[in-house]
Length: 224
Image (spheres, rainbow, N blue to C red):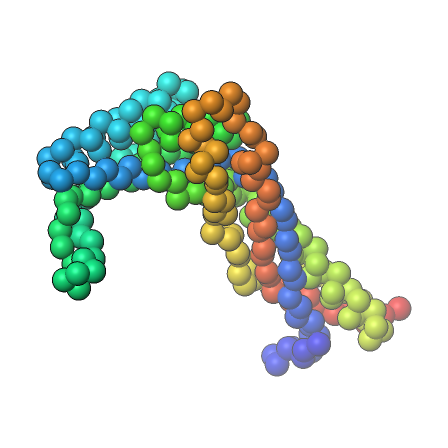
């Protein structure tokens, strides 16, 4: 409890915590296309062909172009260690390109991964699950934090023979929205040519935990 320095008003200041768990409604999948050849131009050509095939396979599922992003090609010499000379020597060229796919319908996620891998992508960094709109989860967490703060203040006041009065001040102390969850997937399973139907359970997203903290100052009145 605190005594206001300028008046006889008595106050109590408490913190409140709120946590909500929500199911994600979108995902971002990152693929890689890596090709190698003795000639730089051939490595580049193969990469362009495989990248285009992977992108087209995803488009056929109805993923809009705005949700597809292909990064610039990186072309560099490939070197291997020579045991005889104890030096690294160039053995060709490696072309690398990243593909980013935003999936707004999670029911499509298994097919997106499977088709991209079977059509040309040969690296799978994983899947990041997230929320398209975070505002509702944030507001729910703040409401819980405010309710928790009032509960604490009421208990303190009751213990010390006082009652809560009006709210004097509310401050949002912190809001924690964890980084999107990353789920590693089975590359071999995604690539399997005889895979009739992707397994949805392999892409279960779980829930995202959102936390909020507030500081609330209440007036205190004498108990009856």
